[in-house]
Length: 254
Image (spheres, rainbow, N blue to C red):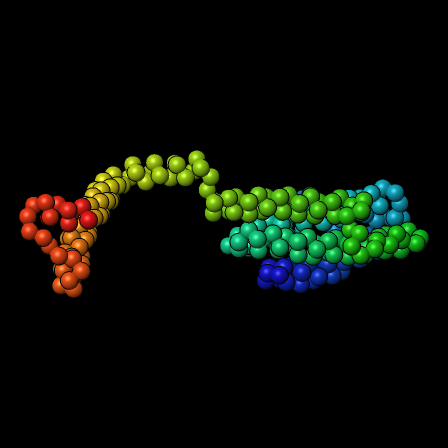
């Protein structure tokens, strides 16, 4: 939960009490002799009624004004959320929108319940009870809360998907990045290519030289080993070197 949700929940509780005391309760004024009701209609004008009867037309004016008030308040809170949470990450805002929806739902339910109870008293009949959490059933303000919350939630989910996709770019994006890098850094590309070529050539020459040295070393070692073995056999008397070319040829064949 973000600080915004905590603050908005507190403010909405205060606003529900203010609206009841300063708007809903004033409708009792028209029900006694000489009294009248003078309240805002939430569309730039005033509602001024007298006569002592809360009939059908008065009930329509009453309920429509409350719906307008709640719709204005719902949009006001969502606009405030948009501004206050702009610096949060998309995931944090996604969690935050659920808290805002819940707080507005309770607010709409509270105001609707109090307005129905007051209307029932004004008509001297039993009022309709709205269960907590059922603000969206049959009320335009409750439906608007859900609609706005779902719209914001869909946008945030798309933003989260885009952020995740940006971390693993596709092939076209990768090729485009390489082309842009090559265009903006031609000197660096040539330098890196030259260094790589020098390193590769040096590595190849080193392997060739090392291979030649190793081959020569092995040949000399092999010849030296044969000479030492032959000298050792002659010294032990096991092989005698006869004089003459024929004897040398025979020894070589042996």
